[in-house]
Amino acid sequence: MKNTFLLFAALLLSLIVQAQSYWNKVASGTNHHLVSVSFGSNMVGYISGTDSVLLKTVDGGNTWNNVTHTGMDFSLARPDIVHVNFVHADTGFAVVSNFENPVYVGTLYKTTDGGSTWNVVNGGFAAYSTFFSDANNGYVVGSQFFAGKTVVAMANGVWDNGNYFSWQPSDFLYTIDCRNNTCITAGDSGYVYRTHNGGTSWDTVKTATDSTIRSLKFLNDSVIVAATDYEMGGVMISTDMGANWHYENSLLTFFYPKMKSVAVSKKDSFIVVGKVNWDTTGVILWWNGSSPMIEGVEQAMNSVAMRNDSVGFAVGNNGLIMSNKGIQVGINSVQKRMSLNVYPNPSDGRFKTEMETAHSVKVYDLTGRLIYANETKQRNHIIDLSRNATGVYLLKAEFNNQQIFQKILRQ
Image 1 (cartoon, one colour):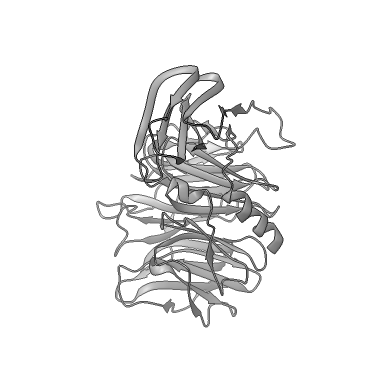
Image 2 (tube, one colour):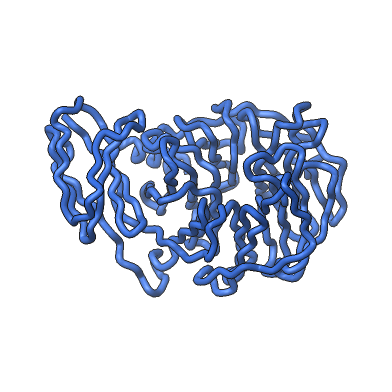
């Protein structure tokens, strides 16, 4: 696996982006921001969002419908369902908080009837996220009102008194993941905290970032992938169970993204989603088993989860749901992949784009400044950067509410 990640880093450092559209939009029926997604089974999944939105699918994500639910307490201070985590098709947990400002608010709820009715569990602190191996064993993380970063464990249905890693109530833990006997949690200020004994004791590790760690997942027994708010290093990797961390110095720095969520399949593959730092669009990065892939989407992405080993669902602002369903090997109804061809690349400043569908083009420099735009939708474009400085630029092609990014080199 170490050699795999060395290959991953080397490939990401290259100038070539796979300029294809692998992710497809799925109708959500809402314009609210979607902020969390979880599948309790291969066919049954849930998406939560702002203003008490809760969606459910019973057909593997083909269609999503609003759930009429009771038992959750919403207010101006906590109007949103910021987290869902289902351990079975009908049994799961949710956190009601404030997506934009979770300080002092955050209530954990549980359902056993597929999201229709909810009951409060273990109140008394500002919950934000969870990990559960089953309905009676797991962890909740967030912030204690007068003790900052908080993690509380439940073993065989019984909650402990919690562990606290800060004295500032504005300091949050946002994510937790477990594998075998080790659990790791993270949040503000770039620290991670680990336990090897069911939450009785925790150690503290400073990572490579000072920014907020929004999500982390075990890829295997030793490798952990983390998503951070640091736009110059949106993805961090640890290869020793979280003891040491390094940025993936990759194409991600070219997009200046703030990454929000990580999902991992059982095939040693992962997906990371987030937001481009210099506009409102989103980014999806994934590892397809042999090479890294990256794709831009029309809205900031907030969460991603796997339906099964190969099919992922990512959710974002303004009701956006994206899925790679229908494109993976072995799945029926394979959809056509849209390719962007740019040549010559490198060039002396004149580039031509070709696609099978009409598209508009924009070009950005390394600071994210827009330097060229042609909003006309056509199958071919001539882009003249001969008066611009030599160097690397980012080309964005937009078509049918989709986006493809590709690096171009002006010599």
